[in-house]
Image 1 (cartoon, rainbow, N blue to C red):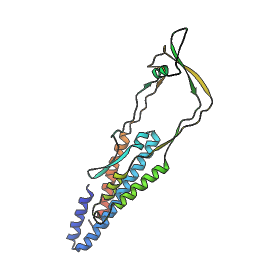
Image 2 (cartoon, helix red, strand yellow):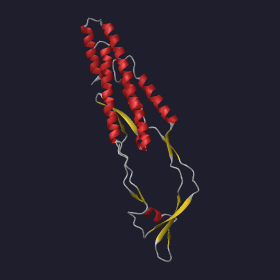
Image 3 (cartoon, helix red, strand yellow):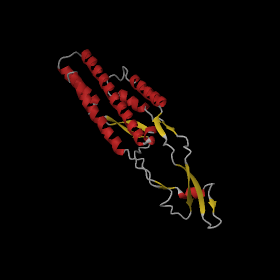
Image 4 (cartoon, rainbow, N blue to C red):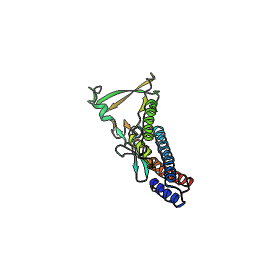
Length: 236
């Protein structure tokens, strides 16, 4: 649903009811302002929700590279390069371990080996949104959006959200690395080991495509619903 086209239909409906041109302009400007506020709220709330879901699932790249773009009569969340699948295949670490500065060659067997310290009780890195960064970015984007509505754009029902989308940027993710626990065990990486089975970092399944696609569909549905409500409330 095109909000601006609905405003034009509202204008025709009000004129057909015998309202004066000045009164129709006043009512249409009020309706446009309400629609602007509604769309801006829908889009900014969706951005906040996707950020929270990304943080929950470990999709830092999504959070830090998120974008909002107007697509047709709605707005869509994406990333700067359009990538939403952040999955990673298994990664063999043995070659790097055996080529590093701590690798040695056994005089007895001729094998290359590396004794690797493993912190068995180290807590995982805590991740959180940089609240200062997030708050500042959101405030700047919303301020820019609200300033975009002026006398020259007062009948543009998508001006605020469009300005928000232009200003909205990714937010930094803070990573607080836990200190060593002190409970160290030593494991030996060796050239006699199978690089496809030993010292392999597991695959990471992190495809955010479905979540973002569903959110974009919800944005469009909510915009349609709110525009219909607002137009109806003004007699359209």
